Image 1 (spheres, rainbow, N blue to C red):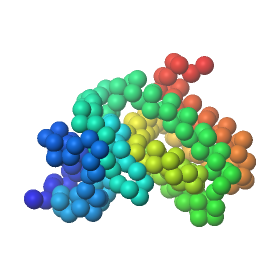
Image 2: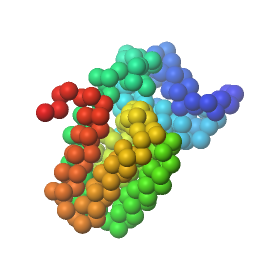
Image 3: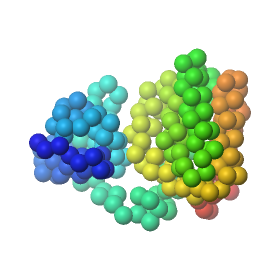
Image 4: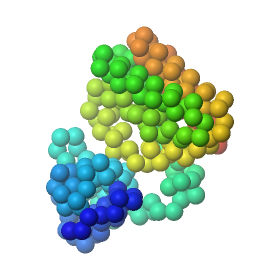
Length: 234
């Protein structure tokens, strides 16, 4: 097979796999080829493969199980993942995602404070420092550093199902972060506020203060939802 163009590799691979699923090459309940096999087939690295599979999982085509691979969940999943008014989202979809993140990550912050080890702390702090550096460049979006910070906290819960749920939403999560952080471009005060919220979460986890970690994470995510106009928050 010819090498896929580098532009939007994961999107191209996502579309190709959806086509295969709809054509019956992989039926419901069947396992997709491994990441390595798909990488060889598309002649790419595993990174865009993982992104494509994350998107397949997030829109309902496949279900991923840690250490077991990805299985076709539905051959008729919604294809309404194309042109949305909020990046790749409608406003409601974006707010629904953030509401789900609040439910997941507030408790994850509490578990992180209770369970994190030294390696976890180093990973969270490293992501925080990366985010701080990007914050100082008021025209850099910084969504990858932001995502890495939250991912490191999720990882430190040491709960495989929490980790897998978070990972399955990687692509939509990153797209939502990118859209949200774009609103702060050229606004150093807003960017500094977001960084401080991250720093307060880290300090609570460092101090093994689960109540404060939970509170600070909730505040951080509620602030994001308010900024984006979620009228459901009371």
